[in-house]
Length: 366
Image 1 (cartoon, helix red, strand yellow):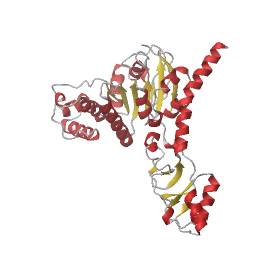
Image 2 (image 1 turned 90 degrees about the horizontal axis):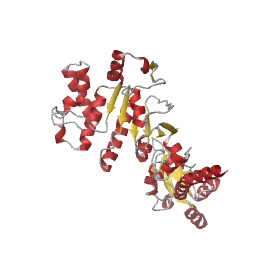
Image 3 (image 1 turned 90 degrees about the vertical axis):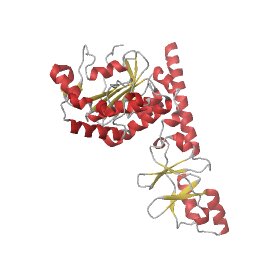
Image 4 (image 1 turned 30 degrees about the horizontal axis):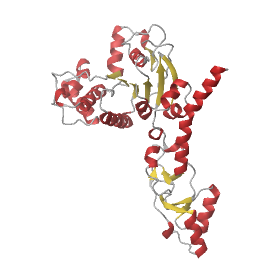
């Protein structure tokens, strides 16, 4: 499949995912970046350098120095041990053996394979072999990682573990990654931004939330219908301001805080602004009626989450029906999430694709 007038702009340090079904042109687009496929028109610019203008030697240097590639099929040398497989790119670059071995061991440690340096590919599972492929790409310390259906051949559980591994590595290394997949759930899970392709053309580019909540074409909307929104949308999409009171507050002050935001509970925070629990309107009203002011006996413990916690995990924390506290990196209260708000958001997203389909059908009739 070719690529039809496709234009993308990948930011330094992001995971840019290109997603599409077989024949959509996604792998062709990826392989144009390092000119494994020669583009017939247009330009490919990396950090100010026009790759399409490079001669053979400059192109070879670009591939060796600036890019690392991870394939769907592991492409390991069966007759070489894991250390030799991982250090292969460095050997081609002429790096001495001691430095190669050190770099290989660092890369293997990053992917959780320390201790397997002298093993052979046939002795490792499929998931472990793919980790070796990733370590080999990382060993040369490239600026750009090109990952072509890298996890597609793995079993679902191993595949998810590899996604976790990739995101953990990215948190440490901040590489620029162009990631190809045919699985929208995977694209939305690992991508900083996602590009949806069909028939060689780009249908939409956006954050995972954009793709899921604001599909721009009926084709994108069809994919959205099958996505588990709770595993993509994060707390930041539903976080609300929290009614917060100090531990020393009275029942009357709790009710005032609750009324000011129109909620049914107030979060109690310590001197550092960290949540210790909630007091419901009902509990505060009973306490005030009895003339009982201290909050201690009224405080009910609730879990805490962060802005990037996915809603599926939050939903599991709503057994008590109480709002969950949202905290920052220091554990300080920054907001609140109510059970009904999560349900409402998931329900709203489910209706987006249907509304787009109906709108397109109406426009076609007119």
